[in-house]
Length: 48
Image 1 (cartoon, rainbow, N blue to C red):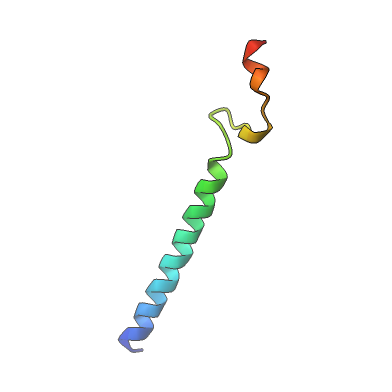
Image 2 (cartoon, rainbow, N blue to C red):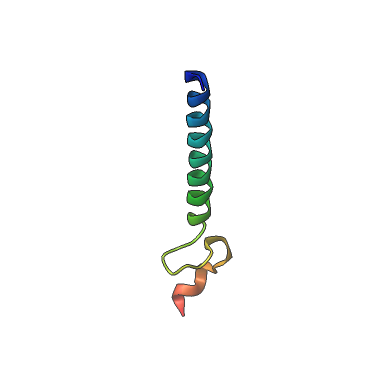
């Protein structure tokens, strides 16, 4: 295998890892500290 083949494999692995991290962080940002969805909670909930 030539140097270009190794470089292509490294680039493909890095791309897959970066994509996984971006999707995971986007999913985690949708939840609060109590593991509830931020977009489904009521804003007046703290009053009760």
